[in-house]
Every structure is written in structure tokens, then in C-alpha cells.
Image 1 (cartoon, rainbow, N blue to C red):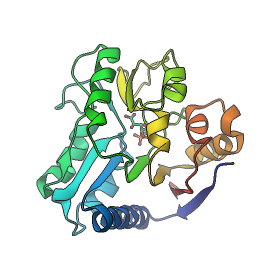
Image 2: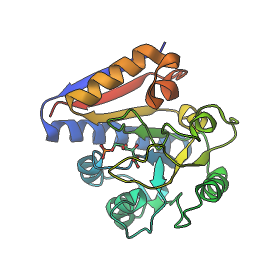
Image 3: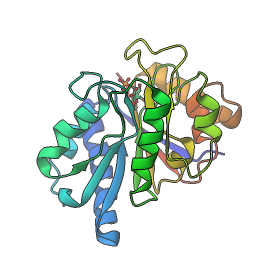
Image 4: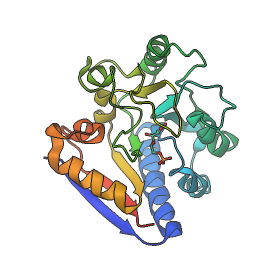
Length: 234
Ligand SMILES: O=C(O)[C@H](O)[C@@H](O)[C@H](O)[C@H](O)COP(=O)(O)O
């Protein structure tokens, strides 16, 4: 049974501020407890207003490492690059922003490289913040030939390469993504989504759990932590 709580907002500013406040609190608590924080932020468009608010928080950013939950295998100056959006917001503050993608379109190789890079970090990760696509993918865990490995691969595998099938129209490229095991290993999981369609889809995915026909339901099915879902009605 997934323990998820929806937090509803009608005002975009309030929504972004609430998420930024929660994340700042998680980072601060990690810094107090362990002297450093490791967090994963999603790609796509939804997180951008939250990045802006979070970047205004006075935190010891130099001790914070941020990785993308997933990235598209594109050049870092591509508008499709997830790490570029994170870097634009948080590098100027002194945070360590660690790319997990490469320009090499061979997603298997890119996945192995991402996995190797992530092994060196201090796990468990303090926060995995997830988005969700209108098709029910989360991070870059998509339907296709790599879905089973992303969901059921070895626990020690932090990241893998993914070729979505079908390719998503907003960013029709191969990806690297955190595995389900690394997402579920997080101390905290937070989800931010907007719009009625995504809300309906996520509620159903959570209810269906392991038998869900969309990746997000399957990813969250065994979550042991309570999950806060911040939903903005558009
Ligand atoms: O790289 C990605 O595609 C993302 O990390 C992905 O999982 C994202 O969260 C959803 O696609 C939602 O994207 P939007 O916020 O743009 O709708």
C-alpha cells in the first residue's frame, strides 16, 4: 500500500513556494545531520518555477550535490538537457551539479557510465523529487525494452540507459535514469505535478500499485516512505 498524501494548490506561486520550502527543509536537515546533502531533481518544464524559489533560499549550497533524476542524451547546451536547467539555477550558488548523461547516443554505454559515476556518491540520497509525464512515466522510466531492467534490475544498480518505446514527443531521444531501486532507497520522495489529467492518472497508478499499467505506479508500488504529492490545479 503506497502511503501518499496529495497537497492541493490553486495558486502557482503558492505551489512553488511550498515545494521549495519543503526541499529547503530536507536539505537543511541533511546538512545539520551529516554536513552534506545529496538530492535528485527532475527534468521537464514543471520544476522550473520551483528552482527559482529554491535558489532564493539561504542554504549552505557549497555542501549540496544535485543530480538529475534522469537526463536526455543530448549536448548540455541543448534545450532538452535536464542538467542544464539545474545547473543554470544552482551552479551560481556554489552547489555541485553532477551530470549523469553523455552526448553518446548509445544509451547502454551512457547508462553504465552514469551508474559508475553515481556509485561514488554518499547514498542513500536525501531526496528524490519526481515529476511525471502525461503518459505515466517518471524519471525516465518509460515503457519499452528497458522497462523491466529499470524496475527489477539489481538493487546495487543506481542508473541505466533507456530507449523509450514509443519515443516521447516532447523529447524524442534516448535517456539515462535512476533505477527504481535507487529512487526507493531515498530518505524522502516528493512528487510535483500540475493539471487534472496528471492528477487522475497518478491517483489511479497509486491505487493500482504493482498491477499499474504505467511506470509511475510500478515504481512507487513498494515505497516504504510516505510520499508528499504537490498538485497544482491549472
Ligand atoms: O526528462 C524527463 O522527461 C523528466 O525528468 C520527466 O520524468 C518529467 O518529469 C516528465 O516528463 C514531466 O515533464 P514536464 O514537467 O515537462 O511535463
